[in-house]
Amino acid sequence: MLTVYSSDHHLHRGVELKDGAITESFENPLRAETVLAQVRAAGLGDVIAPRAFDRACYAGAHSARYVEFLAGAWDEWTATGRTCQALPLVWPVHAMPSSATLPEFIDGKLGFFAMDAGAPINAGTWDAVSASANSALTGAELLSNGGARAAFALCRPPGHHAGHEYMGGYCYLNNAAIAAQALLGRHRRVAILDTDMHHGQGVQEIFYGRDDVLYVSIHGDPTNFYPVVAGYEEETGAGPGDGYNLNLPMPHGAPESTFFERLDDALRALARFQPDALVLALGFDIYKDDPQSQVAVTTDGFGRLGGAIGALGLPTVIVQEGGYHLESLDANARAFFGGFAAAR
Image 1 (cartoon, rainbow, N blue to C red):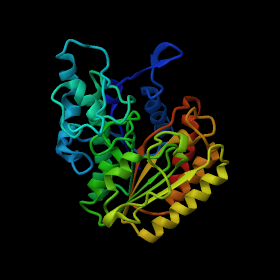
Image 2 (cartoon, rainbow, N blue to C red):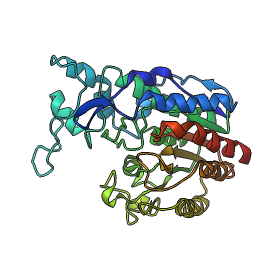
Image 3 (cartoon, rainbow, N blue to C red):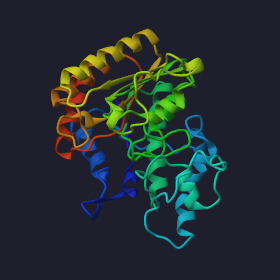
Image 4 (tube, rainbow, N blue to C red):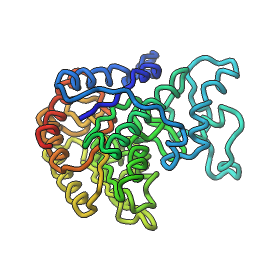
C-alpha cells in the first residue's frame, strides 16, 4: 500500500482560546507526523509526495468560486493591514434579502463561506489544504490507473466537514469527497464510509442528491454534539439520491460493541450498493481516550476495523480525518493498518 504525504501541512497552524489563553489548536502538525512514523515503522510500503493538480480538479465536490476564495483569502485579508489569523466577523442571516449575494469584502466572504469559526486562515493555509486535497487525488489516481489496489492519503488538514461552498470544523477542502469524485472517472459506483467520531455533514451535503456515490457515516449522536445540524437517521438523501445516504449515530457513552454493530450495518449497506471502489474517511477520534470521543473503541478495535475494511477486497483510498489523542495515535495507526494489510 502506498502512502501519500506532503510536509506542506506544517504551513497551516490554528490557534484557539482555551481557559482565557490563546493556545495552538489540537488539530496540529503532530497528528500527521505521529501517523507517518507508524506507517514507516510498519513497513507498509513507499511514502510518496502528492502530484500537483490544477485547482479545477476540486470542482464537483466544491464550486469554482469557493475554491477561488480559499486560494486568495489570505492575500485579501492582509491587504486590509491585518496579519492575525483570519476568522469570520459576520455570517449571513438567511432571512435577509441579500443573504445569497456573495460579498465583495473579505470580512463578508469569510462568513459567507464558513459554517463556524473552526477554520481559521493564515499565510500557509491554502498551500496546506491544497496539498492535502492533492494527496487524496493522488491516492485516487493510483487506484484508477492500476498503480495500487489501496492507498493511504495522509491528509492534514482534514476535510469531511467542508461542504460544497463552506469551510468549518478544521476542514477547508473535502478530501474524501474530492477523492470519490475523481474515482468516478474510472469507477461507476463509489462508496464513502466515514468512521470519524463526528458526522461528515460536508460529504453528505455534496452527494445528498446523487445515486452514484453512497455515503455511510458511523458517528456520535449529533443531538448535542458537533456538527449538531446534520447526521440524523432520517437524512437519507433527496431526489435521485434518496436511499444513498445512511447515518448510523451512536449514543454517547456507547461501548465498543455498539461501534461494531453499526459497522455491521454499514457493511451490509455496502454489500447492497456493490461499489466498484471505496473511500474510507478514517478518524482515530473514536478511541476511548480521545478528547473528542463519545465511544470506547480500543486499540484492538482499530485492528478489527482495519481487518473488516481490508476483507472487502475493494480498491480503497483511506483518507485521514480526525484523531487528537497523540499518546495513542501511533499504536492505533499500527493496529488499523496491520489489520488492513493482513486481511488483503
